[in-house]
Amino acid sequence: MKGYTSIAQIQNYLLTDIAANFQSQVIDWISSIEAYIDQQTGHSFIADSTDSDRKYDGNNKSRLPVDDCVSISKVMIGESEINSADYYKYPANELPIEEILLKSGVFSKGHQNITITGKWGYSSAVPDDIRLVATVLVAGIINFSNDSSGEVQSMNVGRFSVTYKDKTQMSDFDKVGDILASYKKYSF
Image 1 (cartoon, rainbow, N blue to C red):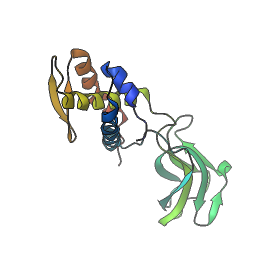
Image 2: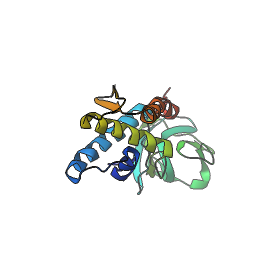
Image 3: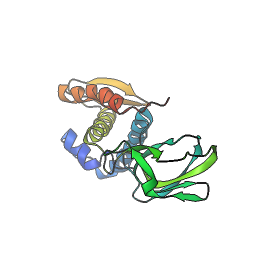
Image 4: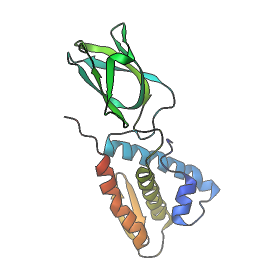
């Protein structure tokens, strides 16, 4: 579980307690919904807390697209470390970092000859609207499993069936697609 939502947040959303013997199932659903969100958007929303290396192919250009990250601590071309004063991180002044620009020179062409060390992910903490998406989707799965009463409306989300018992929950669900679409990462 990455932490996009929690049992406490889902309980608050549903205005009910989740039985202790059912919480492990809810944790599994949270993990599945986190994977669904990541797959739909192309992002991992909570960055790693420690640095790790990722390899890239050199493209013989001064710009190198990289996976989402919140910090970069080292850039290596082959066995040579590039001084942090010799490159820019883009976009400037916002996260996540998506590209590195060398002030001079190029990322030499080659297979996995570039090593970037950083904290990989979209942000240090999950964005509030992604937290809402995760909470709403898991709550819908719980409602479906719970055979909720009220103005029930069911639909499928990925491999799950979700149910919403009132207009507020349905309205929140209607926002899910737009929120996920606003974060969608496109590759060209």
